[in-house]
Amino acid sequence: PRGTNPEKRSAFPLQAKLFGTSEAPSNMEESILSRLVAPFPAYETKEKSPLPPESHSVEFVKCYRSLEKADRAGFLHKLSSDFGVDHAVVAELAGKVVESQQRDRGTVLLVEDRLRYYLTPRYKVLLNHVSRLEGGVKFLVDMRADIIEMLGSQSTDTPHIRELNGVLKSMLSEWFSVGLLNLERVTWQSPCELLQKISEYEAVHPVRNWTDLKRRVGPYRRCYVFTHSSMPGEPLVVLHVALTDHISNNIQTIVKEFSSLDIEEDASSVTTSIFYSISSTQKGLQGVELGNYLIKRVVKELQGEYPHMKKFSSLSPIPGFTKWLLGIISFKIKETGGNGIFTESESKEISEITGGPALETLKQLLSNNEWVRSKRLIKALEVPFMRLCVWYLYGEKHRGYALNPVANFHLQNGAVMWRLNWMADTSPRGITSSCGMMVNYRYFLEDTSSNSTNYLRTKNIVASEQILSLISQFQKNSKL
Image (tube, rainbow, N blue to C red; front, top):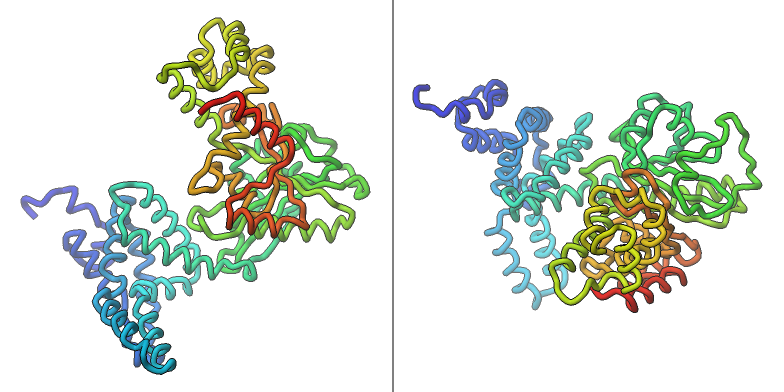
């Protein structure tokens, strides 16, 4: 029509074609959702209300998939804000719950059950029916991934969107509970599609080629995945394990230095499991406990295969350390009164090697990874970087728990912060992310349950003598 903004006219072209409407986007969202989201049945008739037609779920999926990224945010906002909980009804029932406290217990429970029923968002009924479609659960996982992305934007982070995210997370947590997950070992004989996905999803140590992948599922290596019947052929979380006779202190010996692919495993030489990579593949399952259960299941699997295996440890990256360190250095450069990071002798040695002020030159060298070109500088930085990194892992907190997400993951599982390793990952990614350091989180099976409980309740981190010694050095020599 004359005078219509062309952008608005084309905002929902496919939806207009699908649903036979030329309404403005906001009005069309309203009309589509009003038709597809069934009215909430009255409490008295909840067991007898007819199910909404499957076509409504199909149309909802089709409509959502047809939307551009920006339009999905508006669509989900309309769904969550206009088709959620009836707050007036909830407020009235909450008052009745209070009034009923003086009556008999049966009446109290009935009123509370009624309130519980009306606290269910109206859209949850639709989402439940979408999950029953073929591919419906995968659709909801992907939709939640969109919601998580929206929550990272100030313009689309709203209370209603946060509630929708919480509702979906709760639903997915039930559907993906540990009893419904399937543990699979991936081998070179596994379907090609699964091997391809294992390669693509590897987020910690990228797979270089098919030979590299073949080694990672070959002798003295194990790869396990969790799958779910509602998402066939789709690994949900992937765990790579190295079978060794010691707790590895660098990743090069695991992912780069291989023996022949044709050798036979000597079971008697395997005493240790090294969990060197764990990757969640579905962003929409963020916050749904999968990785910790996978490690526990794999431990049991390996104990069955190797009854004499006693040592279980991760060899973990330290994402975020270099960024944190650069932030500290930048802050100290602006601050007067000394660097507060290195001792006088360390600063002097760094300046002699780099030819400039310790903090300023180090900031530049860390930003472009040039420092690893100097063997003298690598040696000079080992002691100060080790104590700084331990503090980052042990002392930096988020709501009282370890700031580093990998540390928090293993500590929640009940592992011990056991050993920090210098130059353990000399790949460009390892140098950029953590100045080449990696850390072992060791699982003492008899203590994992109590360690996990203590960490979650008291935020206490169980650490080895090496870690605690480095912490003492930090407290003595660094002032942040």
